[in-house]
Amino acid sequence: YLTTSYGTGQDIDERIVEANPLLEAFGNAKTVRNNNSSRFGKFVEIHFNEKNAVVGGFVSHYLLEKSRICRQSPEERNYHIFYRLCAGAPEEIRQKFHLGPPDTFRYLNRGCTRFFASKDTDRQILQNRKSPEHLKAGPLKDPLLDDHGDFSRMCVAMKKIGLDDAEKLDLFRVVAGVLHLGNINFEEAGSTSGGCTIKNKSGETLEHCAELLGLEEDDLRVSLTSRVMLTTAGGAKGTAIKVPLKVEQANNARDALAKAVYSRLFDHVVTRVNQCFPFHSSASFIGVLDIAGFEYFEHNSFEQFCINYCNEKLQQFFNERILKEEQELYQREGLGVNEVHYVDNQDCIDLVEAKLVGILDILDEENRLPQPSDQHFTDAVHSKHKSHFRLTVPRKSKLTVHRNVRDDEGFIIRHFAGAVCYETVRSRTSGTQTLGLLQTLTVGVSNLQTQFVEKNNDALHASLETLTQLNILLERLRSTGSSFIRCIKPNLKMVSHQFEGAQILSQLQCSGRSEW
Image (cartoon, rainbow, N blue to C red; front, side, top):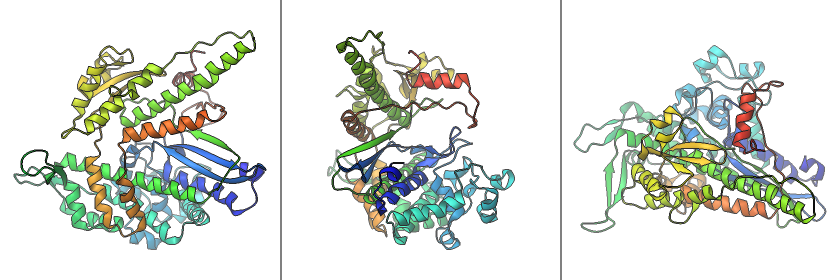
């Protein structure tokens, strides 16, 4: 609308419009509530000159849902790009990247493996590209989604925003590499070392993965089955020792690498999108923040913790901007408006971000230890906040599934929208193993893969990165005028004219609106 109404009629208008389908391909996925759900937060700015004409734009992104890369719920899918590549890639690319139907990849086959397609485009997808589930139940239907057709449209969008064929292939190569990485399996080594090896059946998959990611096969093999530990005492300090990984540890390391590679791929896509509509100066801008709402599931991890922390900060901003400042204005102008009371959530925010004793600082401190552990981190959180109103142990939960969580395996935070039990087992991420694996990419065959390593050398811990990004965002929001839109899903069936009262009430509670 903005580029049509206020555009200059130049190429930049088209590039701004074409950027969104590309971001959706790499950052959106099918969920049970939305066939095209954005799984990352974004702040989109459209900039104008003194004559109110569009001169450029900028996209900031936050909290990509990394867990989806390795696992999805039965009725959900991974990111669209994986299915579009499998369904729509030319046969030459399919063979070059060793692609099969979605059910042949671990990172896709635990969710829904059907393609989105119309009756006509379903005929265009070759039978050997379809999963048994797709062949039996037919394609997924959505008037706005079509994996085969969307692949072609995505390629056109890439060209319009300035990506040449070589860079486009690099993106697809990394996507395919992530899929093959997930198919690498491990088994116990059967030696006194207690480590593991890659199964013989995964030898060809390892070869494909190394080829696509621009690695030496032996380097990838060693990196996936061992970790590097630096000595702190005895002999020469800082001596690097390779420690064999057990099967479960190797599986976790493989998945951590897949998440890190795809996350950096997404960072690169956003960077290239921003490069396609630069601007030297602007008189004003209109910004739209689209970020996930409050989340709580049966099992909640570090991802939900970060999302809900962001929502606590945004709720505080909402309270300040709409409730506190507006009521102060009414009082100054002598308007007889009844006061609206609201709960100040600063104590919950301090619980997360306070210096030294905040959960993020405790997590960061744990990651600096020679041998960090989930249990030690959780015990430290409980120890430093024994009497905090907002925090308690899992056994005090009203839900049986949470009462089964041990005290050193999680904690409950009472958010503005409700209490959430966060499980810390395997949620605490030191990043050391992932950093070591990513450094293997130093000999990547493409410029894109080299950028992964350069960026990784300056990478912050996830907790610090979340805090930094959020503070920058809030500073940006406070410098502008704000309007708020609360999106309420009327039902879970994605149909019109059907309202589910309990579902709507739950969403109102999660947005902090139920007390009004």
